Length: 98
Image (cartoon, rainbow, N blue to C red; front, side, top):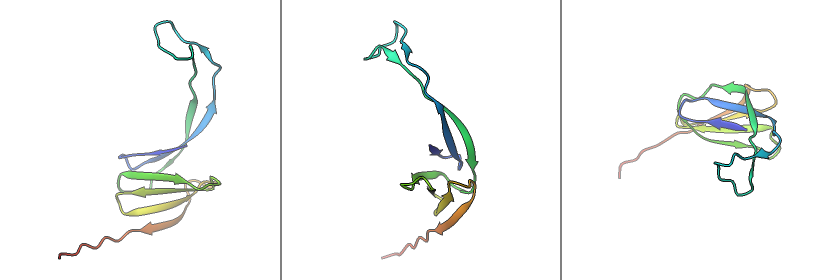
């Protein structure tokens, strides 16, 4: 899993496991009467954007991660060799007055 935000940092997370279901305390509402919580651990911190992270997308085979930022860059990361960047795409904005 990947997450990013206004701190300009992308975090890569690894699922550490699913705990066994347990009975929910009587004071909590649960439609099934049971509750479980996943456990995630951060494994990589990616720092290359200079602006807020706007979007993240994994390739269908999980080999690449694309990140987009308000710094007008899209970075293509090699997910097998974090923090290696394979490509940087720089956006260019043109403002015309009409």
